Length: 110
Ligand SMILES: [Zn+2]
Image: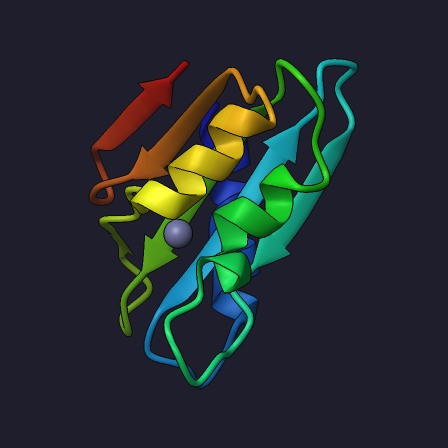
């Protein structure tokens, strides 16, 4: 699991020059790994969120890891918003792990 959080963090780090840096990793049931980061938008738009973007590439029973990093590259709260949770639920994602801090994570499952 740490491995996937690390991968999500690497993706978030590459997401430069913006205030909110998110990285998401999705693991399909067969083990295929897909990734996404946030895309910049001028208005709040859950379709731009890394976790909903990655959810769209996934199928039933997949697992998502989503992290958010601050300016110093520490992991911070990345709990998916209500709209993203809805998208994940409708895609029948099994579980979503999200960062809370460098040493804590949370989990949502459906
Ligand atoms: Zn969201």
